[in-house]
Length: 328
Image (cartoon, rainbow, N blue to C red; front, side, top):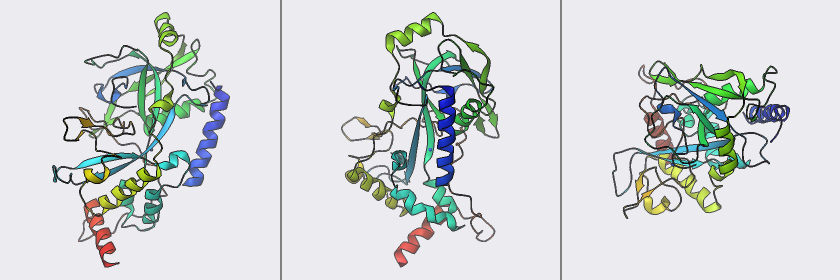
């Protein structure tokens, strides 16, 4: 495990790269913090990655959501979303982003470009020290995984860069718990008051026993699989079909990527094969709408030109793109 100084250096390096460029499955190991009651706090204790080559104690995911109006041969008027990995996670050129980046230069296109822009999330592991949430079933292994959105991650990262934090928060003897607090801002959940505990805390005997007995997760095992050339082609086909207003076609794409909960017709439910049906920006099950994390995207352009006194909707912009393609 890297030292706190190493993590700070890597964070600065990653932030520099980001500025230069100008986002595990449905088992109950994932702690659904988005379901905790409003006004409550869950106390978490993060642990190191089981992969010692990882300088951080988290992994970053970058995912693209492709929305369809329905499913061909099924429910044609019920919107579905297919979540796919963005290959920029592997420092490769993403064909979807190569297509939409120029759209940010057109003030009428910015909103639709943001719709397809990658969403970042961060995978951690650790203990749920205290929880206000009553879960139906608890995993046998008390080491849980946490799918953290960008707004919470920024709180975590800011504290790590603070020179007043001396010890690595994942240290077994001198680490620090993280207090994940849920409030509301408007109609959305808000986690901006989350913070690190003021005092260090040693892991207790039960927690140390769990680490020794169960071992740490290798977080990379729960990351999306890098798309093959064939899968990348399917991603681009789905993106283009989505922009064109077409339905999701299971005959073309279900062997690669499926909407969460999609029925294959054999009585089984096909999950997205990238292990991302849990997305903390838009949880599958939530009692309260959760605010989406800010999307990292090119510098914001002007808002789309209003039409008859009203701002064009995403659907209006999609129609405009389709008309452009037809007339081209």
